[in-house]
Length: 402
Image (cartoon, rainbow, N blue to C red; front, side, top):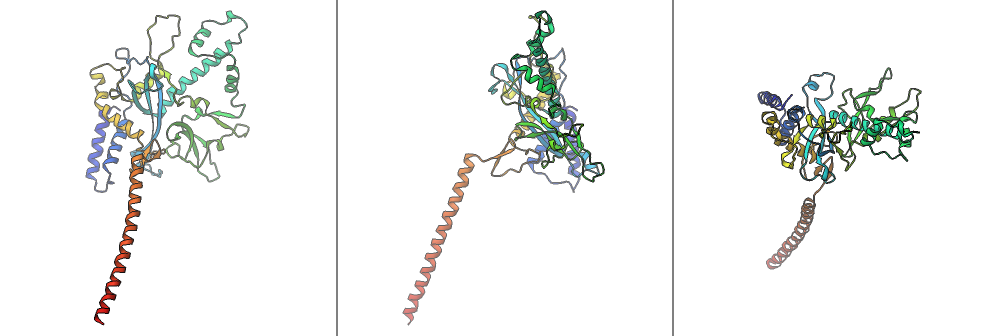
């Protein structure tokens, strides 16, 4: 569904709410959050990257920024009689395309994007799995007995990865023997799946899927109460329900999953040249094309230079970019907590899932506290003086009458 269709649905929803006297009242802040949330959630793609109109991002790298859950009203949840809530959990990732020359800082000429978590994980995990596979294949070539056994494939693999022949063997052995060593790769649970079947014990079924952790700076695997992985159960750990076919307890390995949100790590959008043609034109990597095509975009305000004027094909994106930028800002500034609930604005400023009070707020709070204490002391002094003064006047008057 594109932005125009999303806007139409929003107008219909607004009209329905206006004609319904029992509709819940919403604040201006909540109404805007709901509007932009639904708008971005339906912005699956703005145009197709094709040969006729392809954005060149070969000079950029993907950099993870934040993972964020957002709870919004869902018609499907409301119509489901078995559902305990009318709120559906949407999962977003904010990432940037940073210039290769300044990816570490990434504070100018970059694009900022919001995309659903499932699409982000599918694209980036596949990319990392290809890198891992190429690394271990190239590692095997380190131990080739004869140089002639190293064909063109070996050369291609070494172009893709920088292999340390002194350490790669142990690392690849750990990957190959992961299950034998009692570990399950965390990327096994990128899609919601059951980890506990209650059968006849009367307990509820449990499921595992990706969650945002550490105030959105990490992505981990958590426990959910429902088969759609909407309701997180923070009281339980996935590893408590992982067992091998022989009944042995298993642990999660986050080694591969960590690579997609590693701090200050950038992944080039330049596709590797599989052939020997050094003069071949640079091409976008499949990962970057997938992410760019599916994401809602905030580019112009950051000076992103990868977009040209594609006329009508780009009009939809350009006309909605302000809303997308505002929504990304609201996600980053703490409109929602880690579980996706809306944070009520107050004296504390919620940043990225945590609470943080600014210096000005601290000063004002201290000033008002000290001022209140001072006024209380001053009031007590005045009360004491007035009381004593009144008693003295009465005593004098009594003496005069006598």
